[in-house]
Length: 538
Image 1 (spheres, rainbow, N blue to C red):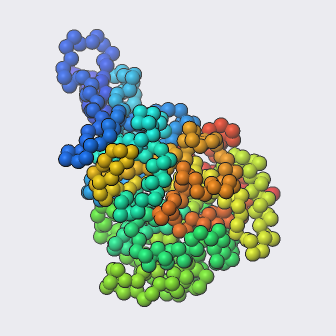
Image 2 (image 1 turned 135 degrees about the vertical axis):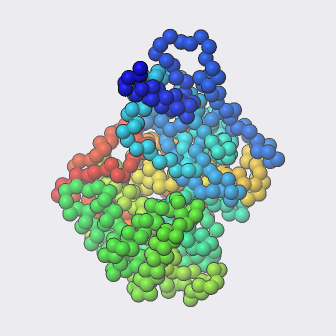
Image 3 (image 1 turned 90 degrees about the vertical axis):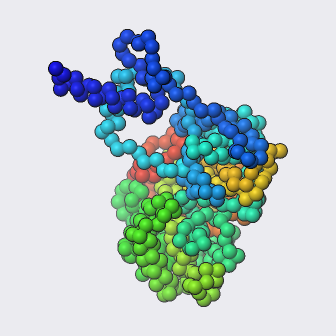
């Protein structure tokens, strides 16, 4: 007769076998080995890496599959992870294929322990279409292909042409959208300006196919290329007032940073009446959280939230003052014809997208202050600049040292670590032809932290941005380059640096969590949700 313990053990063994089948790992029994193992017990061989697309032009050998993240020392690796949209050819993107089974095979007891440990916590949700590769994998590709673009096969069977040489990066940024079309990630957010899709519903990236009217309006309203925005006075006053929420207590975390920055964003874009509109803030939060799902098919509930937010923003735009971005947009835009999708640009759509674009400012602000807290000398110099800026008069808002700190934070922890574009026709890279619809991947995070080409790649060095040609360095792309450069880069830098100045002007960062090594390599990823700063009055 079977006991309760025996039945439970049999059930656990069955779960271990199922786990082994899903992961492809062989299971070694603790007892005597069986002389004849069936085919099901053998580890599945890894698939051959790379194959030229059927009916396409000859493709470069993609080489071995890319090892997963975590294959090297955390202080030396660089992660590249960004959700991708479906390509123009309709093929879904997917994560880079992992390497074969690890060298050490777990025993049944070890696998059982992992199973029991994992049973007590929820599984992380994997976003479809993510790209994830370690710096070691990209360096291995470069060593194998000699700096030539490497063709890599993904788990879904799609091929990605990975650019590994700065020479190819220059071409990537210079090609027009008629050659390399934008294939923006599911959630391209940050200190840049999004572009709506053809129906003005889907935010995209600055590289999208904007109409000339929209490009001109964005450049005029956001004052592209000007270090200090023409409306810097009202904008900086708003930042100073909302920054009080950051220093209201002795600690600063992401929740408090988001509250202060989002209030300031609504006032800067829509005007003071929008500051306390918690309902609009909730709708925008839902749109940000569900953006990845909305791209596939917009549900009725999600469309309702979108429509309500759009109508509320349009109402604010009607009464926006001249010192707000929405008011400036209304002056530059012509009359809106809702029945003509190719007519004049709707200022309400632009204002709504500018609000979404400021979503990453709290993350960048918190990371910058954390890095300054770990580097006392840099913090003292930035605080001195913040104190002197009060008497700067017309030069108020420049803050070159703090802007360099923000740029360096974005170099180390970019908002969009991958840039994806798709070829519209047959193209040739380094003598190899690639068919139309080939996805071209520029791993910006890898190039910005490449120790073979970037001095002190894993260290916080804001001084590198003071060099005259630093902004044109093709390896560094916090705001992209060429025709796809973000028109709101200077405005985003001004706002983020001003928030940092308001914190440092009256407070000193005396404690940080996590604790960073000021001289050693910085971690590859830095989740702002885990950042907590201790502030002490000066």
